[in-house]
Length: 209
Image (cartoon, rainbow, N blue to C red):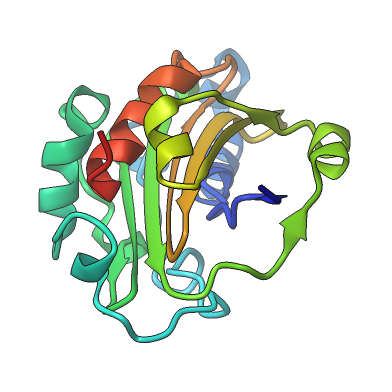
């Protein structure tokens, strides 16, 4: 089938703002430490929101994936990846056909401790923005083989990116009319998220397997 890039919510965006606070925090910034107050994640209400340009049809999430209505319910499905991280409420949002949930500790004292987990889901017409297999290869997207996803006429893939703000591992599972993306971002080193584990989490949210 034709594959498409994930519509990834920029998980590094909040981390960028946090790191900016660390860099301007004064004497402690040079050795990677700051006061707790300086590292607090800012109110991201107008910085990181559920994507407003997502193509959805107003179809309830429950029709095409697990019936989750809050980020707390999503957290139960995601499990250990977020169990020690508080929800960033100002960056999280639920709508009828899509959601974005962001977890990240807002009281870290070292930049190296900054970790953020973002889970997004959407249902509706997801056929736009498709990429061919060759285009996926050029973009650095790697397909993840999975029998359950194949049986659902879907595709799973992963993308790794390294930036000045954070290193990210993203896993997306897309099936007809539904998509889940899991992104783990960490400062200074790639997060410990293997693609198969990410696919397992996404399949739980999509009620596959």
